[in-house]
Length: 386
Ligand code: PLP
Image 1 (cartoon, rainbow, N blue to C red):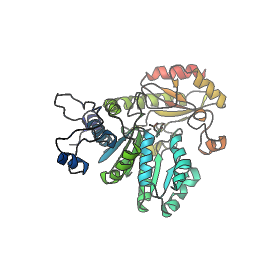
Image 2 (cartoon, helix red, strand yellow):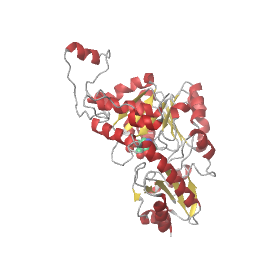
Image 3 (tube, rainbow, N blue to C red):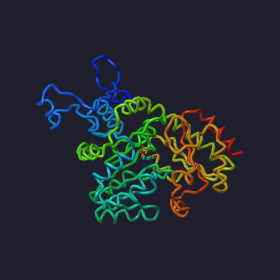
Image 4 (spheres, rainbow, N blue to C red):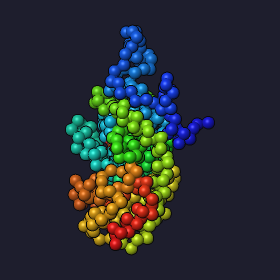
């Protein structure tokens, strides 16, 4: 029987240590010695698995976290990177050179990379929003080779149908990559739904404590093999110390995320009843537009929600500034609850018209629910809204 997710989070990838350590020791080593040139060549020429040089990822701490990361998403293989953006860059340069389509809203850095930077290298990119989404079929017919999206998206929590998009992309010979950062593998398994790649900013839920920066790419071994050289020569492999810190966090991932799901649900319900709140965007609420699809493809609805304050952007800013327990900070997925106003942080660089096109109003506040008591978080929101 295949072990469950919690068991895999604790045990997958851990290597047996001669001293009996229950988890993989930290190999801070940059290079590894060999008894002979013949042994060295066995590793260099790929006849034997082994450690060689840390930037290559050939380090036991790196290999250990990669086996754990692959096990989380039910993938054949995983590469671990020094950031989520590093994972995306390596994916795009390997599997997106004939064209990348990004569906819906995405993290600001991803949008900048796709809209302004990859085109400088001659890589065609297409950012499809709202009504333009109907052009996916046409763009794929013209030869784009990678469809990329987040689900749920930031900050409107839009839900995309992974299975349906994968079917359409595969019919055109294209591949699908899902950024699973917001959901985490506890709530959603894109590979099982037909995606070819999963990308993570491990800086968020997988790291879970707002104290490390890392990224991951998961998928079939054959598809990940050519990504390895890009990571090696871009020099964006995860550091062994961070790999060990990430492994420690992943051992508690399901406990944290399930609690965050429950608290986010409670906060969403409380906010939906509040007279000063115009709208609550949370996939777990029955009147949320993507609720039925979320029920179909997610196990839990996640720890992220967006509230829209009645009034203008300044009213939302006042609420954000009055919160005491929620920290005003632009990240997510940690044990501490965070608040951001998208128009002043993640989407600050966009014009008001562009934000409106993405369904983002200035009165929105995005909440990342941590591990405090839900009642305390709700009380904090009540006092800030009063
Ligand atoms: N993907 C999502 C959904 C994100 O929110 C972020 C960062 O906020 C990234 C990717 C990039 O990750 P990193 O900051 O680890 O490079």
